Image (cartoon, rainbow, N blue to C red):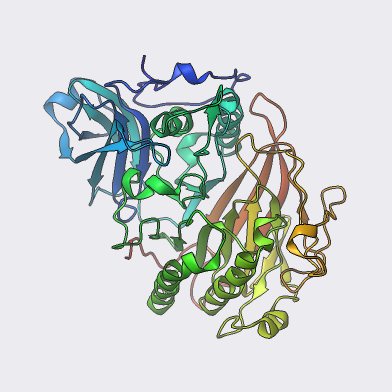
Amino acid sequence: MMARIVCVLLPIVSAMPAFAAIGVNAYAITPSPTAVMVTFANGPDSRGFSWQTDMTVTESEVRLVAGAASLADFETTPLVYTGSCVQVADMPHGTTPLANCHKVIIKNLQPGTAYSYRLGGAGHYVYGRTDVKPRTSNKFTIVNLNDAQMKDPTKVAIWENSLAASVMAVCGVANVDFIINGGDLFDQNLKVNNAYVTVPIKWSIVLDPVFAFYNGVPFVSSSGNHDYREYGTRMPIEYPTNLAGCESLDYGNVHIATIPNTGSDTYSGYVNYLNWLESDLAANVARGTSTWRIVCVHFGPYTTGDHAQTAGGKELAKRLGGICAANKVDLVLQAHDHTFSKTLPYRWSGTGWTNEAQDNTVVNLTPATCTYAGETWDENPNGTYYLSCGSAGHRVGEGTEYANLDGAHPYNEWTPIIAIGKIAVASKWGNVGDPASSDLGRSMFGVIRVDGYRLSYDFYMIDSDDGSHVLYDKLRVSKTPPSGASSTGLHISLSQNR
């Protein structure tokens, strides 16, 4: 049977019912496309499509029709693109090929055009729509989803619930420009009845619900320690040579860069990725075309979770913090720890943080504020916020103990200092008074809205099992436009740089 793909041209999500647990036996690799992924292949006017089939289908094709389309339109008036097909195995648990992974990359689409698409081959297709947004606006919305980490397929309903809630939070999928995913879409060690679930099935389990809720919405994704092995094969993106997972995107007045996870929390494996990130951000600063800069990582250095407090996490904090400070990064989106964390703006020191002493000189400052639309905004904070938005899947409420962050205890003697959702961070790696919380027991997601020189991040927590959600915390940042510029009329740069 075909895995839970719904073939629709213009999917609409409205009120969602409570979701039922899905058994792993509901998924199978067949000639029909599953595990559909849509990305920015090389810039916002491009699209990458990937999917998998059984090994009887080797044809990899995407057909596009501008606007709404009938089934007949895909035969008579389409733009036709062919791609590649490679066999994928059950890594790391086996090397025998189990499925075909198909990838098609399409460039130079027309901005401001909604395309209907058909992907597949050999008579087995799925359909959808992808909107190439116009270049004339610096007002857009990004959904942040981290750590679906499907470890138990019977709990996939929790991931579906997070997807449904995020669609409702933005009043419909048509309002979402793209998704930033912080990695760990699934857990490579997922088992049922003490037997490993194969990797192709895992990709279907986690991506088929995304297709149902966010059909055609592009992903920008950082790989995680549980899913990193196949990113180069699975993601339809033109990554830099030998740097799969390093993605750079200029979207309106925002520059976004991602670095992948190495599968480890040791610092040494990140050096080449951090070197690339430093060069990418410096080039963006030199171009002078971005109001906002966002970095997406899986292994983040400033969270209230245990991973950030390893020796590798502290080394990462010094190097990544320095790069972000020197290149005026506004947000670092972190995952991995499954916690909610939000720092004060760690200040840019001009040359960045090159040692622990410098780090202590730049972090303990509070930004000025202004009022806009009845809310208080951090005004010209000149610093980097490090944000973590929990887990969008079921890996919540697991009773993990978190580091006390004061440097007084060795790695194996952490003690939790969580109190009613707030934590006072007393450390050179944080700020006294930073709001943060532990693993909340409910999944979370974030919504970023950019409106010219204003940027907001809303942290949502799932309130129940029917897609309802509550605003858990929020960040509001405002910058003063340069002389002669309006608050929303900005310089436009829509190119992806490698």
